[in-house]
Image 1: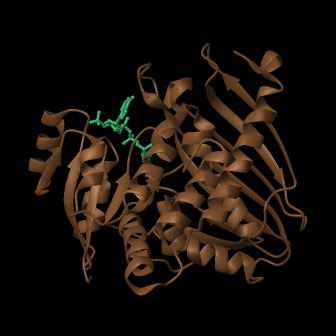
Image 2: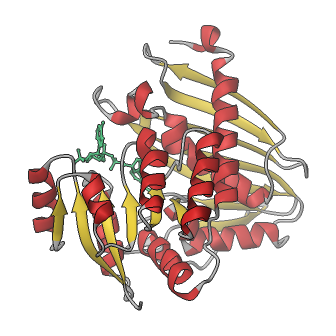
Length: 329
Ligand SMILES: NC(=O)c1ccc[n+]([C@@H]2O[C@H](COP(=O)([O-])OP(=O)(O)OC[C@H]3O[C@@H](n4cnc5c(N)ncnc54)[C@H](OP(=O)(O)O)[C@@H]3O)[C@@H](O)[C@H]2O)c1
């Protein structure tokens, strides 16, 4: 096999990014899309020149003409459809968060092992050269002794029918955008936190709309972040060391084209730009999985990393809910 044929489950908001990413990857092509609604599947297939349109996710999984499945469904369906796709003999790229509990990640790992197929969580920003460089600089000692990682990711989400504010669908800003600064801090630490703290403002359905969290890592690194659905677009990361601070102005959603994202090294009043290039990070994600499947290289994100992600998010959510009475409103 030299070219992987991709199938998309869920032609929603994020799916066109994957279409572009696969289109830019020499060893990948789009084969199929599936929707619960036949007309929606046909319309998406027509708009993106995808050969096959299925009116159910199961029928796409039964197709012998699909090698890799992209799970682009609401959060509560990630584990179920990842496991079903693996059982059907497909490799899987599943959007973040891979699951909503550690037990679900373990079930995915079991299914992956049984099927001999890969399952990878779609944290596209962890494939961008700016983040790879930042992690390399931080872990390589360029900032001195690492002290603190500070991250922010928020935007306005006002539509009440959106799955991201539905408690039965894995809603909440922590699961949707907080997972980014949390995963980056863990990546920089190179280990899992041994303590967390958190507060949140929950809506009337118990979904967090603004969240602040803190993590302590065994090696001493501290991390804090805020995320939310109730503030204008904000994203930023500072990695603070004893000698210098690295600042990423668009760590999570840098534009794929145009000027490169801003990354600066700050020492006292001196600011030095770090040389990074613009990249379609979704394409980098597809290429990483393609190489893992076709060449046997280890995927950049493994299930142990995802397990740590989900465990930390669950702990943060639990910590914030412990203060529910005092923090509502
Ligand atoms: N990595 C990133 O940059 C990024 C960005 C945005 C979102 N995401 C992640 O990608 C996933 C999908 O996000 P999205 O914004 O694309 O979601 P979305 O547009 O709200 O939903 C995606 C698709 O899910 C299907 N679906 C299945 N059951 C559903 C239900 N009960 N209610 C609503 N839709 C249902 C729908 O397709 P049919 O009804 O046609 O089958 C829908 O088009 C989420 O997990 C999100 O966290 C990642």
